[in-house]
Every structure is written in structure tokens, then in C-alpha cells.
Image 1 (cartoon, one colour):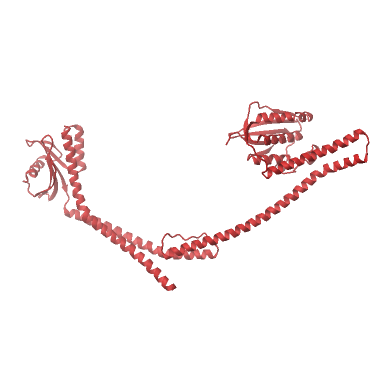
Image 2 (cartoon, one colour):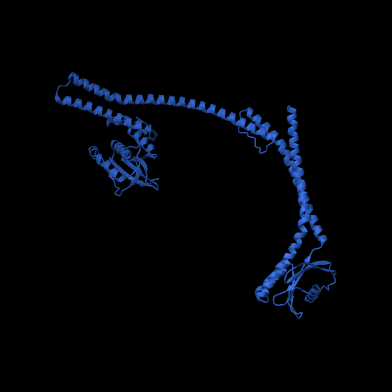
Length: 498
């Protein structure tokens, strides 16, 4: 059965090759024969006749419009003669030459008279005729040359003769045979190219399928069979492509599932680590205030100092530490909502200048208590697109951070840097620059550069993390820049609605 199928395939391919070559050669020969036999001579004769009739019509129209002797028509007359290889002579009723393109006017005149009256030394055959003209074939025995001659009567009564030479039949045959030779050479070349192409078309698919199967053994599925035919080899190649795609898809699905499993394990491990780190940080941050609350509460309970002033002091400490814990829990809840995308973002247009002045006004008492001078020189409105409530929280965190770290001259400066599509708002405070190695970690939860100082003013290390989460939710940038005499924190907001 396999041998029979193989034999049929060979016969099928051989038949295709033989049919293509025989059809191509036969079609080429038949086409050349038809062109030579049917179209060449008739096309040549019609072309000569059309040239004469077209020239006569143009001259007849010029005579009718009385433009025959004009300078403009003289140019057109020369074009008719030169472009169409026509000799023209016009004579009046007295036999005088009115207009001629012939070099030998006298000889042309005699041939003109002979053509009209049929007295030339050769036969004159009528070819075609019209209302005002007649076309004849005339042979010049002396030159052994044939001509088509049109003679007729113009509207002004003058006679016109137009003559164009005809190449001999032998010359036409020579041209025709030369044409057939060129076509035959082309046919041979095309046949040879076709044989090479078809042969490769038979052998190349077999080699290509062998290479594809070898690569599939090594699980390389990039190799594909490229065939557009409908024979058995092309069908086999298409089936191998489908098999390759199925295997590749199956292996890809297995790898994807395996990769997802690895990612899930990694995410689980990462979440576990984050949970442990979070619990450790929260425990560390709550340990001190809880210890203070417990210690002072026990002092109150045991009445260590029974005077009213001591009791008030103990209560103030407990209230202060409880407030710090409350603030930290609120910030953690806010940060959790931002990080998990549970907080609603409302984009609106508002005046950043007005917002900053409001934040500075709210912090006026704190600035005065710490002996800090705040500068904001902007007076014009600066409209931006963002969530006004969240940007107010960002500016509050930036300003609070600047107040707690202002040193030396104790100055805070808020200023703008206007860009093409956004507005950069910066908060600068004088003081010691932040160590370069700490800059990338400032936005991490509970990270503190100077832990003693942070604890001194009750900082939790969450404020800048909230700033980063807010700016990420708005898809805008924020950052920090060290200067010689201080630190600059900045954020950028859209000034366009897009």
C-alpha cells in the first residue's frame, strides 16, 4: 500500500511537470504563430492607411479654414511629413505646385499625374477610397519600391497627393522571422527556468519536511513548512505544521502553569516576609507608647505621687502616647487603602497656590513654636489636575517633615518649577543633607534616617510612604534632592486635562 501511494505521488508530480512544460512551450509557439499570421500584415497595412487618411483630414480641415498657407500650419505640415514619413504635394488646376515637401518637385509632379491617370510605369491598385480621396498601391520599377498613394481634391479645388513607402514582403518576412527567433529564444529560456524551478519544487519540500521532523525531535517548533500547493507533499507539510502548533501550545500551557505555580509560591513567600516585617515594625513602634501608657497608668493606680500636678502629668503622658498610637494606626489604614487600591481617586482642577497657602496657614503655630521662617513667594494662581484632598495630605506631610528637620537658619521655602506639561512643587528646608545611601529608602514604611530625632517629635516613618502611595495612585512622580545647605522634596502634577 505504501509503495502504491508513493508511485501515485510520483506519477502525479511528473504529470504536473510535463503538463507545465508542454503547455508553456506549446502556448508560446502558438501565440507567436497567431501574431505573425493573423495580426502582423493587417496591422502594418492599416497603420499606413490611417497615417495617410489622418494627414489628408488635417490638411483638408486647414484648407477649409483657409489656414493652408499660414505660418502656424506650416509647422503642422512639416510634422505630418516627418513624423509619418509622408511626402505631400498640392497643385492647382493649372498644374502649378502650391505646396510640396518633396526634394525633387518635378519628379514628384510627374508621378502625381501618373498616379491620377494611371500612366506610371507600373501597376496601380485601388486600396481604399473616400468621398474626396482615393488610396492606391503604386510600384516604382526603377527603385523596386512600393508606395501607398492617396490623392484627392481639397475644398479649394486644388489636388493633393500624399505618398508613403511600403517595405517589401521580404523585409517583412525577415522582420517576422527575427521576431519569431527572439520569441523562441525566450521560450527556451523560460522552459529551462521552469524545469529547474519545478524540479526544485519537487525535491525541496521533501528535504524541508525532513529538516522539520529532525528539529521537532529536539522540541524546536519554530520550523514551519511553507507550501501553497494542493499535492500530497503540501498536505503532509500542513499536517506537520498543525502537529507542531499543537505540541508547542501544549508544552507552552504546561510551562505557563508551572511558571504561575512558581510565581504563586514566590508571591506567597514575599507576602509572608512582608507580613512578618510589618508585624515586627508595628510591634516595635507600638512597644514604646504601650510601655509608657502601662507604666504611667500603674503609677496612677498605685498613687506614687498623690498630688494633682503629678496626676495631671501622668494623664497627659498617657493621652499623648495614646494619640501617637491613634495617629499611627490611622496612617497605616490610609496607607493600606492606597496600596491595595481601595481608596477612591477624584481628579479635579484646583488652584495649587491657594492649597499651599491653606497648608501654611494651618501650620503657622507649629512654625512659630519651632522658630522657623516659611517662604512662599507665588502670588498667581496655578491650576492643576489631581485629587485635591490627597495633594493636601502630601503637602502636609512634606511641610511637617520639613518643620521637624529644619536646622541652621531654620528656613522653609515652597516654590514652583513650571514645565511644558506639568508643574513641579518643591518644599525645601535648611539643615543637614540626607546620606545618599538613605535616599532610596525614604519611601519605605517605618524607615527612619535619624531614629532618635524621629522619636523625639513622635514620627512613625509612615508619612513619606503615604506620599509615595498617593503619587503612584495619581500616576505622577515625586522625589527628593540633596543640596549643600538642606533638602528639597518635590512632586509633579498635570496642568493639562489630558
